[in-house]
Image (cartoon, rainbow, N blue to C red; front, side):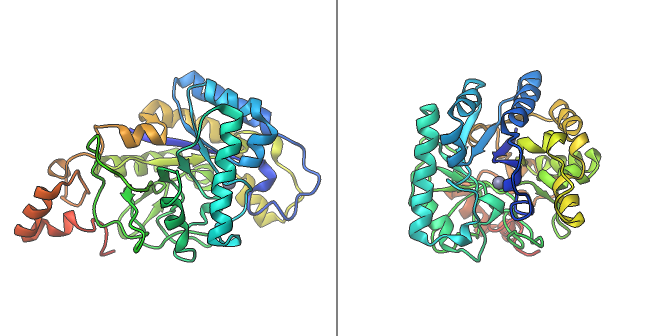
Length: 326
Ligand SMILES: [Zn+2]
């Protein structure tokens, strides 16, 4: 199973638009309705990472998401990058957004996604703060370097965060029920080993052909890994397109808006999707490494597997950092 997620914010809060768009028209209700209709048509549930301020302003929308059977997560209390916080103010921001979402829905979020994928080595304390909070998982790591964000060579599979080395995934998850688990990092979908291809969603999904997106999801699934996709409700609403921003910002912000719903339809017809929480509790994932084609997939590993790996030199890289040597 793969994870489908939506970052719920005002369209003009996107990083490239927030400085140039003044006096924006509110499109949140219309945009969200389009997305909920698509999911309803396919009978698919997804995770909605909601900005806390927006949840406080539109409790009815948050309740609608909940009533659709979807998972509610936090997208921060305000739509600011993590680098604008100190560890202390970030911790407050995590709690405030969870309070706002709980007030609106009665549900305390267990997942977090940072605005602008702004969790990377430049804020090494961010995952440590999350691990010390009530959140169970984070999905903010974009596991490749891009001009605006990303963790170069980052883990492509979910992993348990260790506070001293938060970006290093030494072992795949042990998902045995009842296992005491720390914060889980669920990186968004980036396919390919040496040459990484971002198929995660957003601008990439609007720009790449659907065949490339499908290839990327398949690439991950064939290695026993879930693909975690992200979109924004406004990306399904051509009414947000405005000529105000500079042309390059306009391209990145709006290109492909008119065809994204069709692409998502195709992906939902082709692959199994659910919430991030579903993926983390789905016992069919991860696939065992024995079943992987080229032996490089991270699989379910327990202590005896780890010992066996140490005793079997050729398997060692498989069990330790699956993609460490890229
Ligand atoms: Zn966002």
